[in-house]
Length: 98
Image 1: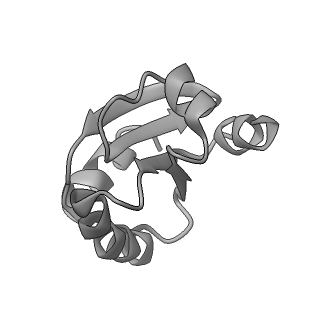
Image 2 (image 1 turned 90 degrees about the horizontal axis):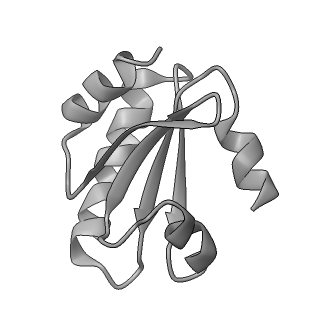
Protein backbone atom coordinates (compact mmCIF):
# COMPACT_ATOMS: atom_id res chain seq x y z
CA UNK A 1 0.00 0.00 0.00
CA UNK A 2 2.77 2.47 0.88
CA UNK A 3 4.49 1.57 -2.37
CA UNK A 4 1.32 2.50 -4.28
CA UNK A 5 1.16 5.86 -2.49
CA UNK A 6 4.78 6.52 -3.48
CA UNK A 7 4.11 5.59 -7.10
CA UNK A 8 1.17 7.99 -7.48
CA UNK A 9 2.74 10.96 -5.65
CA UNK A 10 5.12 12.19 -8.34
CA UNK A 11 4.76 15.12 -10.72
CA UNK A 12 4.34 12.77 -13.67
CA UNK A 13 0.82 11.40 -14.36
CA UNK A 14 0.29 7.78 -13.33
CA UNK A 15 -2.32 5.69 -15.16
CA UNK A 16 -3.59 2.88 -12.94
CA UNK A 17 -5.41 -0.06 -14.50
CA UNK A 18 -7.55 -1.70 -11.81
CA UNK A 19 -8.19 -5.16 -13.30
CA UNK A 20 -9.01 -8.78 -12.51
CA UNK A 21 -7.45 -11.84 -14.12
CA UNK A 22 -10.89 -13.39 -14.77
CA UNK A 23 -12.25 -10.27 -16.54
CA UNK A 24 -12.60 -10.48 -20.34
CA UNK A 25 -12.57 -6.71 -20.99
CA UNK A 26 -9.52 -6.42 -18.71
CA UNK A 27 -7.66 -8.86 -20.97
CA UNK A 28 -8.59 -6.65 -23.93
CA UNK A 29 -6.89 -3.70 -22.19
CA UNK A 30 -3.47 -5.36 -22.01
CA UNK A 31 -2.43 -4.82 -25.67
CA UNK A 32 -4.01 -1.34 -25.59
CA UNK A 33 -1.87 -0.40 -22.59
CA UNK A 34 1.22 -1.81 -24.33
CA UNK A 35 0.45 0.39 -27.36
CA UNK A 36 -0.14 3.39 -25.09
CA UNK A 37 3.20 2.85 -23.36
CA UNK A 38 4.98 2.90 -26.71
CA UNK A 39 3.11 6.06 -27.76
CA UNK A 40 3.67 8.11 -24.61
CA UNK A 41 7.10 6.84 -23.60
CA UNK A 42 8.10 8.17 -20.19
CA UNK A 43 5.60 11.07 -20.13
CA UNK A 44 3.48 8.97 -17.77
CA UNK A 45 3.77 5.80 -15.72
CA UNK A 46 1.36 2.91 -16.25
CA UNK A 47 0.73 0.43 -13.47
CA UNK A 48 -1.71 -2.47 -13.11
CA UNK A 49 -3.47 -3.33 -9.86
CA UNK A 50 -5.17 -6.71 -9.49
CA UNK A 51 -8.30 -5.96 -7.48
CA UNK A 52 -8.45 -9.52 -6.15
CA UNK A 53 -4.95 -9.21 -4.67
CA UNK A 54 -5.33 -5.59 -3.58
CA UNK A 55 -8.91 -5.53 -2.28
CA UNK A 56 -8.18 -2.84 0.31
CA UNK A 57 -6.77 -0.53 -2.36
CA UNK A 58 -9.74 -1.19 -4.65
CA UNK A 59 -12.12 -0.38 -1.79
CA UNK A 60 -10.16 2.76 -0.88
CA UNK A 61 -10.68 4.12 -4.40
CA UNK A 62 -14.24 2.83 -4.77
CA UNK A 63 -13.48 0.45 -7.62
CA UNK A 64 -16.68 -1.53 -8.20
CA UNK A 65 -16.22 -2.44 -11.87
CA UNK A 66 -13.23 -3.69 -13.81
CA UNK A 67 -11.44 -2.49 -15.75
CA UNK A 68 -11.37 0.88 -14.04
CA UNK A 69 -8.71 3.25 -15.28
CA UNK A 70 -7.57 6.12 -13.11
CA UNK A 71 -5.00 8.87 -13.50
CA UNK A 72 -3.20 10.19 -10.44
CA UNK A 73 -0.94 13.21 -10.23
CA UNK A 74 0.87 14.32 -7.08
CA UNK A 75 -1.12 11.74 -5.11
CA UNK A 76 -4.49 13.09 -6.25
CA UNK A 77 -7.05 11.23 -8.34
CA UNK A 78 -7.56 13.53 -11.34
CA UNK A 79 -9.42 11.31 -13.84
CA UNK A 80 -11.26 8.00 -13.69
CA UNK A 81 -13.45 5.90 -15.98
CA UNK A 82 -14.53 2.27 -16.16
CA UNK A 83 -14.54 0.13 -19.27
CA UNK A 84 -12.30 -0.46 -22.26
CA UNK A 85 -10.69 2.63 -23.79
CA UNK A 86 -8.50 3.04 -26.87
CA UNK A 87 -4.85 4.04 -26.60
CA UNK A 88 -5.74 7.39 -28.22
CA UNK A 89 -8.47 8.10 -25.65
CA UNK A 90 -6.08 7.31 -22.80
CA UNK A 91 -3.27 9.39 -24.33
CA UNK A 92 -5.64 12.37 -24.56
CA UNK A 93 -6.69 11.89 -20.94
CA UNK A 94 -3.05 11.75 -19.81
CA UNK A 95 -2.13 14.83 -21.89
CA UNK A 96 -4.56 16.93 -19.81
CA UNK A 97 -2.40 16.37 -16.75
CA UNK A 98 1.15 16.59 -18.09
